[in-house]
Structures are given as C-alpha cells and as structure tokens.
Length: 122
Image (tube, rainbow, N blue to C red; front, side, top):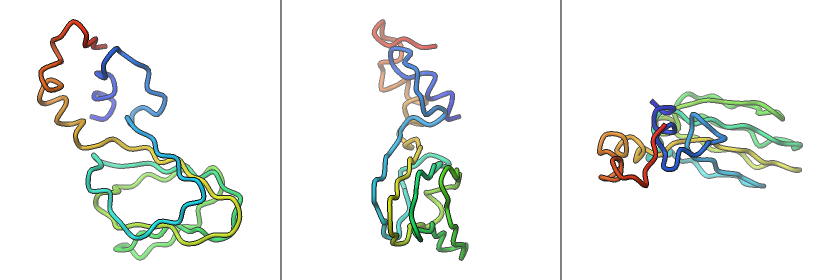
C-alpha cells in the first residue's frame, strides 16, 4: 500500500525513503510519550548514535529497547505509545513514515489532480 502511494506522487519523483513518503531527522532529541495518530500503518526508526542510554520505550508492551548505532526498528507508531529516554552523548535518528492523508490521496484521485496533465503517474 505504501509503495503504491509513493509510486503515484506528482512528477514521478524518486522518493529515497520509499516505501515511506516522509522522513524526520531527530538530532539530540528526547521525546515525551506519544502516539503518531496520523501515521499510516508502520513507521521505521534508524538510529545513528554514539551515546549512553536513550532507550526506546514501548509503553503498552512494557518493552525497553537499547537501540545501538545502525539499528532499524519497524513498529505501528499510531497504535503503541512510545518515547525515548534521556541520553548522554551524540544521539540522532531518522524516522520514516507516511501520513494517513496519503491513503485519501489514492482513494480520492489526489483531490481531482490525478487526471491532470501536470500530474504524471508511474
């Protein structure tokens, strides 16, 4: 589903984070507990870090993950409350996701633009 959406983005652009359509870069960030209610299906987190602590916590599951450099995690960010703990050192992560609005884009012919000459599909 996600790749289908990415393949239909305007101007037939290459999306480097495919099958996801968006990427967030977190630099030196500890987050509070949250769910990403607007994410569509799963998100992926790639850790780029040289730090102590900073574990990723999945609240309802009671799981604490010590994410090391180059670890890649995939989880349903809209279903599970999560946060990362405080850390010491250099900590960064890339979060790949697709907004639920992407699903609407496919179902509603990209708000009527899907048949436009300016809208090139793969």
